[in-house]
Image (cartoon, rainbow, N blue to C red; front, side, top):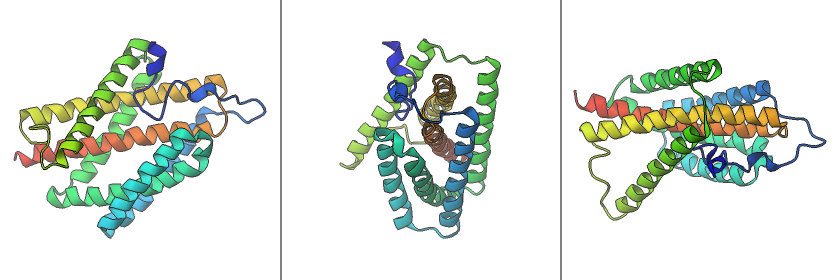
Length: 241
């Protein structure tokens, strides 16, 4: 049963490696790292555009288009070499605009969020490779359950917002709101460990070459989520000043 929760990231499910790679080039760690770097570069490219030229239609279009590409990638993994770059470009449009919005309200917050996100990525990668953090089955189950709970809260809050309401306090700058954001940042960060493990498992199992893009997609999803949550946390903290 625990194997059903190998990752809290919805893109990285237990059936991912069930596709045979017989007769194909296989996934490599270097390839997955390179694809992740390409994805991040594409995100930054379009993010810079909407940062300098904010556009609400582009932001909304990027968010919706990114969601469509994400769903397509999850259900058609073999499309990853095409859908993941498109996902990165579209998400960049959204991230650049939302970052500019937060930065206008709290100058310097976007740079702080980027530095913290990359710092967490580097620290957890070192911790994972050194064995300080080991993704045991119980660890994976716990992170997956916590991640699912967070998204359930967000879905409920979204539904309530359609009726002019929302879950009280979690979006405010009080102790409960800040505590909630800290918890979400921790869970988002620990999902990176599961993403690292997922990629290593794919390499060990000889997954098809296109799974390099799929592994990169999982990391991009987590990094974007982590960045946005750090941005929200910093905004809450700065609004208290």
